[in-house]
Length: 277
Image (cartoon, rainbow, N blue to C red; front, side, top):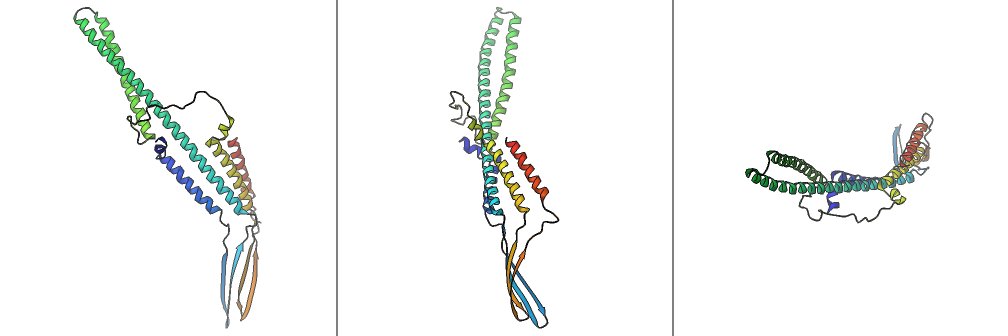
């Protein structure tokens, strides 16, 4: 029941949709980086109709597709850990709110019992006062104690209402009469610490995934800075002569060698590693 309520939280719904988006994005990153290109040309030269048609393909020489695939897998893993971390936080907040409400409820009940006792005492005081068996000062002290109790009850009732509202914010279908949540135990009888608990915590895994993601982005930036060749083949007719040709092109990273982009990506990877550590 608790999990079903937490799953209705807008932040949890948003995190799940982002995880779905990362899954689709990861799938798209497994596809080929470059699509083939169709080329065609036509010109009229005197009485001749010259034309050609061909196809070209850029070669993923540095295996950018593998880096994209790795980056997509890391992104999915990071969103999974982000969702798990959010669920843990929401559940902890909900349990804390329930504990606060239960504590406020018990405090209000204790004060209510005290109020009943004081009301009985006031009746006794009134009887003794009418019989002349009680000094006015003693009666005033009883009235003062009752007034203080009323003030405390009012404060605790406000605290109880605030605690109730907080629980309803986190658990939409909850009410003070909701069964099976009036008491619960964590089943812990002793405390022990295991370092693997820290390593397996979703927030730690998320930080590690972000670090690995930045490393992959740095590698991808390095690959993107390297030129990939394009090879093509075409056929046609020129002045009534059949033609067949092969084309080759390669970008020249002369005016921009992308070195600053590579340095920036490496610095971001170092920063992500520092956050993980």
